[in-house]
Length: 150
Image 1 (cartoon, one colour):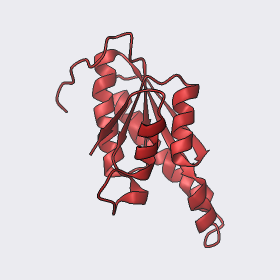
Image 2 (tube, one colour; image 1 turned 135 degrees about the vertical axis):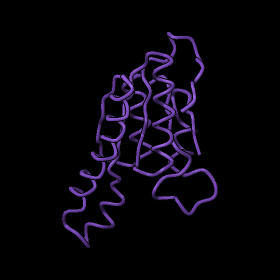
Image 3 (cartoon, helix red, strand yellow; image 1 turned 45 degrees about the vertical axis):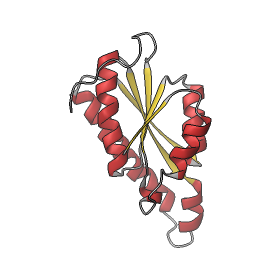
Image 4 (cartoon, helix red, strand yellow; image 1 turned 180 degrees about the horizontal axis):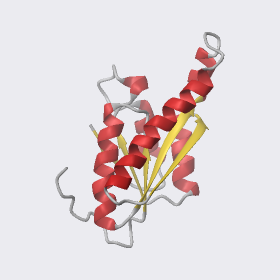
């Protein structure tokens, strides 16, 4: 990944939230967030949200769907953790449950996040040409800047 120039002063970015859903878009966003974190000596917060709508829809088919989603989420978050550790970036991961955009916004506010770095679309909206609905809502209501990558 090419060198990322400082976008803000060093005091501005201390914590970067990187929501993941395991998609290629979120993996690319995580890689880009690492370069920003290194340039600003910032910490990464990797987050996966277990979508309660998905749980409700799939629990009729599989009684273990929430457990399976949690395992998948941990794997996706671990990808970011491993990436950060390889690059010497301090990282924390969190798995939470709810509506993804609401949980991302809650984390941004409660953890005093300085920047959110996320992909344009995720697994739920891979067929969409336009920006994903989760990303759109995060952009609209975020308390901090949001960097969106294709």
